[in-house]
Amino acid sequence: MSDRRWDTVLTYLAAAAGPTGVIAVDGPAEAAGLLAARLRARSIDVSPSGDVVVRARTSRSDGRRADVAAVVDLSDPSWPILSHADPARLPAERWYSTESRAFFAVRAARWDAKFGDDLPAYTAAVSSSSVRPGGVAIDIGCGTGRALPPLRDAVGPAGTVIGVDHTPEMLQVAAGRARASAATLVQGDARQLPFATGTADALFAAGLVTHLPDQDEALSELARITRPGGRLILFHPTGRATLAARHGRTLDPSELLAADVLPAVMSRTGWSLLSYDDAPDRFHAVGQRN
Ligand SMILES: C[S@@+](CC[C@H](N)C(=O)[O-])C[C@H]1O[C@@H](n2cnc3c(N)ncnc32)[C@H](O)[C@@H]1O
Image (cartoon, helix red, strand yellow):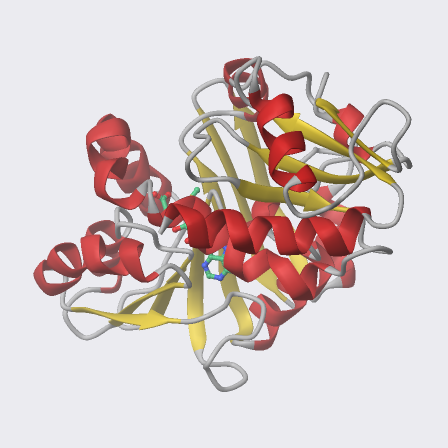
């Protein structure tokens, strides 16, 4: 498994970083050396005078510098993940799905033990979002299904609850909650959803949109499957500043969920922003389909 994972990442890196380029690495002190050795074993010239330079990433913004071809997460050296590639060298279409699923696959089994305390926050987020009884509510990027029970409570027995995720391991963990909430689980990509135009009355997306490579495209696809007047609930059980501090980074004012960015992105993708709350203990924004 681990060898196959390394093989996948090294193939992406050969495409993104060749013939010249910087690869920035997250992980323990020895991570850059480990990756350099793996690349050399593939006859990729990695040395101070070589064409490909491998070094530790110094900050989140460092990974977006023009000379950085790719960023690799080696927090677990047996499970490397490509977390960023310069789109001009390697378009997201070629690597994003595989790498995102690999990232979440190994986290699925421990997800609820790690984040179980957040459940009341999901209930509060759904109950304060005017989800219509009897409607169709879809949790996009549902993970282990933490929002499925409150979505069922909100739509009632006559409504429909669906959870969508592209990581099979997450859906396996979600199966118990889905059964208990009479919800249907669908393996699918948020960027190309298997639903007809105007299907949904309410979409719930927790911890999803900032992971997607083309956020305009993603919000437009969410708008496509939502009926006019329907809701989009963007949620996270911690606010942006709290989350940034937890990950040791500073707040990025150009990020999609920033107060100065989200209204414009929503309005050009078919939504009107109805409410926005970026408190220390939650991020909660509700949009209405135009
Ligand atoms: C941070 S987790 C949040 C999970 C869940 N919403 C929660 O709050 O516990 C992000 C989830 O989105 C899923 N995901 C990421 N990109 C996706 C995509 N393009 N389509 C569908 N699911 C995606 C991941 O598999 C993962 O389960």
